[in-house]
Amino acid sequence: MSPLAGIDVSYYQGTVEWSKVLTDNVHFVYLKATDGITYTDPMFHENQKTLMNSKAVYGAYHFFEPKDSGVKQAENFLTQVQIHKNMLPPVLDVEITQGVAKELLKKHVREWLETVSKKFDCKPIIYSYSSFYEQNLETDFVDYPVWIADYTKKPNILKGEPKFIIWQHTQKGDIVGINSMVDKNLFFGNYKNLEAIKCKKESEKENE
Image (cartoon, rainbow, N blue to C red; front, side, top):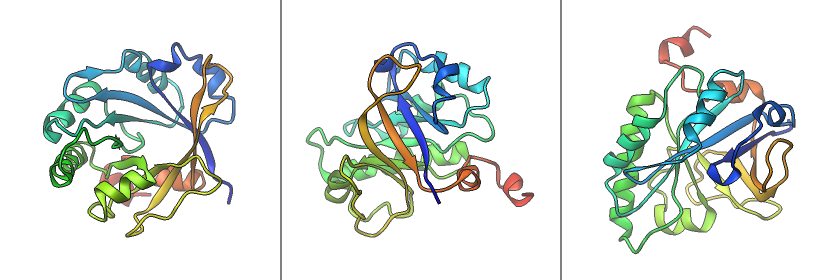
C-alpha cells in the first residue's frame, strides 16, 4: 500500500495557487491556523475559504506555546477554524519548551487536546519531532495519533508506540503553485483510511 502525499502550509508560502497545487500529487493539506492565545496566521482565512469551496481534503493546526494556558490556546484555535463535516483531525504542533517544566508543559498540552477534542468530536493529532516527543511528552499521550517530523530515510518508532499516521519527511519540497519550499508529508494509508480519520459525528460513522 503506497502512502498518500500531502503538504502543510502557512503564510511563509505566500499566496498559494490551489488549483495547481491540488493537481500535483497532493492528496491532503494542513493549514497553519493559530499560535498561542492571540495569533492567527495571516493567510489562514483565505486558504480555509478556498479549500472549503473545493473538494480538497484538509485540516488545520495550532502552534503550541508552552507558557500559555492550553484552554486559552484552544479557544483561540476554535474561534478561527470553521468546523465542517469531513474535515481532517485538528493538529497540535508541539516542538518547543520555552524553559517550562515538563509536567506543566504536559498539563497545557492535555488541556488543548481535550478542549479541542470535545468541540470537533474527534481525537486531535500531535505533531512533533521524535526526540522532542520522547523527551518531553514521554508516554503520556500514546492514545493520540502522531505526526512526526523526521528528515532521515526512515522515522523512529516512539516509546509507547502511539499510532504513527503521518510522516513529514522534508522541509524542502517543491510543489507546482507554491513559489517557495514547502513541507512534504506522507499519510500511511489509502483513501479509505484517510476518510476514516475525518472528523465525522459518531452517528455518521455508524451509518457507513
